[in-house]
Image: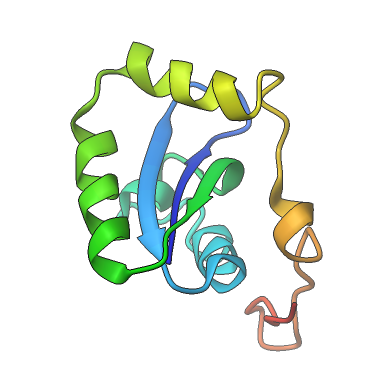
Amino acid sequence: MTVYITTNFKKTTLYVGVTNELGYRLVEHYQNRGKRKTFAGRYHCYYLIYFENHDTPDGAIQREKEVKKWNRSKKEELINSFNPEWAFLNDQVIEWPPEEGLTGRVEWYV
């Protein structure tokens, strides 16, 4: 299980999430870009800037809840300790950007 943080292109909004398949989840966020029904979609938060792996689902879920409660400054400290340049890390997890299929949906692959 992975706890992760994504942001938008200008790095003004942070989204904290948890998933058992980070590559697939990044593609989902990308597909939802601009859709107001989801927080990550509304704010175009599909650029990966932080992630940490956990051995158990319970550990990952507890960590996600902990990080979500933090203020922006504390989240920035966490990101800076892992990725001080705030580089987009999507291509370290999955081929990026994902290709759009004939249906307009992004084809998922690792």
